[in-house]
Length: 139
Image 1 (cartoon, rainbow, N blue to C red):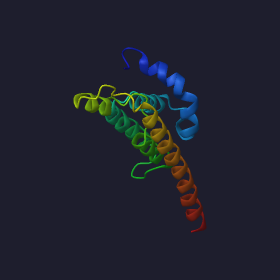
Image 2: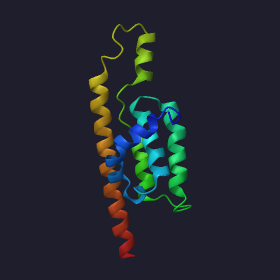
Image 3: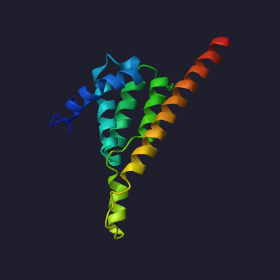
Image 4: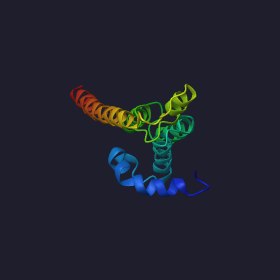
């Protein structure tokens, strides 16, 4: 993806959203590019490609806080796990292999379920991060 320039294009397209989700890393282009590549792979239903990209992003993010999972790193894990898939290739290929004539008729349900899971995950990560910071401030 990087050699073809797809990563750079998707990174530019996703940057406004990713800056809001990861404000601590908005000035670090290497981290943002890794996150954008991870998100792009997940959007395209390429889970096997998304995993190493997510690990690379996590490694770059963890350099700032070694040994501690920052809020941004937790957000990355949540977004990577609950990812929105525009093209669920694995499920569609299993359905096609089982003889389904329309393996992609599940798209609306996949889009809705994945959008809801990402929204709930992001909300939970933000709320729990705030609760944790408030708890630490009291101690």
